[in-house]
Image (cartoon, rainbow, N blue to C red; front, top):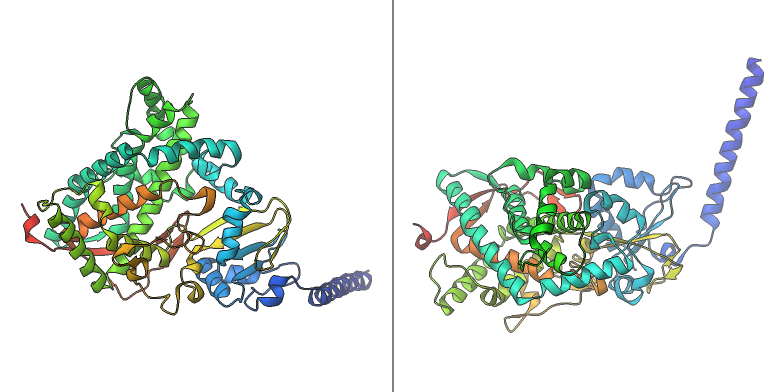
Length: 477
């Protein structure tokens, strides 16, 4: 009996080994796709398990791992094979990005991989919608975000929050020689600003633990956010009917029959997306600025020149027009986001068989991901100084010059270009100008490369510890 069992077991093992050998032989001898033929940097792929071993080994450094492979690949496109799943195409090729985001836009919608993970957080908001629902929300958002009235209102709110909430915290830290986590301060501060812009509510996030419920937004549920403050959606719906208000929720109400669920999704979606991306941009900007004193000096000089030009007293708020005159600051922020994009990846799903411009075959149902982080470090896009922090690459005769969004897809591109792009720049520029004119931000352990955390946005593990020092005595009371 034992002998029969052992023989049977040996037969099974032998059959499995023979099957695997046959599978490996077929995998080696099968015709290669154009991507696999030309891309020597493609992750190692094994029968049955695909690239699982490499993925597990590099899961904590997925951004850097995929970037290294993409940069070593002639087409800057790779095929990531996964066990039990369709392959995923990852690209950093501007021609492919244009193909996906504009030329063949309808063939690459937001797929289930993207929407299933984010629906629990955002609900039905335009960032994860397709078709007519997306078009309807985007039309309203683009119209409102581009209006002069809204931009002026946004500047007033940002300036007020900066000078009444943020500046006092920095003053106190300077006086007490305290170390601050600038990333956490920005999280609370941006939550305050976006709450006021969204529904004219000030949650006092800089002085209360309320914002803790919103931190790490990619890991919390939409329903939890709903139950935190349902009164906002219901009250705003009642208050705003027939009344002209400047906040975003009120403007969405004005454009049609809004339900409580609709307002909840709009409010949470815009609040979280606007907070997380701006926090990421500001945090990485101040980190990279700490090792570039030449750039910091030029920003300070530009801010002071704009203040002098308009005869503004120290501490007096800049308006929308004056913020737009700060071209070097605009370039410095743009350059920071090139190297550290707030949203380093974006994923689409192919709805029908396609071939990318570089020859990569994409089958129906495959996910296609473009890596903006890798694109920001590519010599063939930015030249041999691509790893340098150099705001001047964005300037011509001192005037900011925008690059192709398919080379620089930080704000997406094509029909899904970020509707809040201008608002994001207004916020960041006004905050930076107000801080840098008055304070020197000294990053602690500035020689260490921060560890990246990828949730919905690119954040720093452990935050950004800084000390604050007064730059100019004219601002002191």
